[in-house]
Image 1 (cartoon, helix red, strand yellow):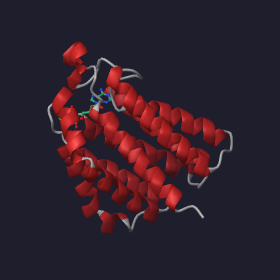
Image 2: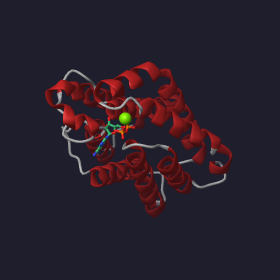
Image 3: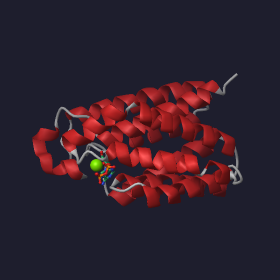
Length: 211
Ligand code: ADP
Ligand code: MG
């Protein structure tokens, strides 16, 4: 992975978050404490400020630095979870040190496993993991079956959207919304929405770079 790709993906993620201000804010206001948009915006801005420094690093070191920065700038539950994601992804990229799609899938899966470990949550608990887990599983399966990058991006974009929408019908058993019981039903989880936006933005960036 090239560091220049990480930087342009980070810009796309920031733009996607900024474009969805009212949606992210109202989702967290409905079933959380209303700060999720601000948290994500703060994280995205901190990464933008790091661009010059990140550009001097290898991809794995840049992702690790992004994780550390998110840990120190995003408050709330989502900060440490996203930090774990990027830092674990960086570790796999460093170890494997190649550009195989299976390496990217393994790095993504390691990131998701780290979120699970830190958040002690599983599929179906109305969190960001309802997007991340199915996407990681599909990414690994498609990479292993030699699917092309375009087909993979299209499939992952679709799966992320399905996972995000599926949180609407769920009761939360982790995070702030866990105290709401059935009142959480009918609202999409804010962290699931922001992860779907991030996956969509990165996939779009990958597709734009395809011949
Ligand atoms: P906070 O909940 O501290 O206000 P945010 O509003 O930034 O933090 O993030 C809330 C999101 O974090 C939730 O919508 C959910 O997706 C995610 N989340 C919360 N707890 C967990 C957990 N234990 N595991 C995975 N994701 C979680
Ligand atoms: Mg919140």
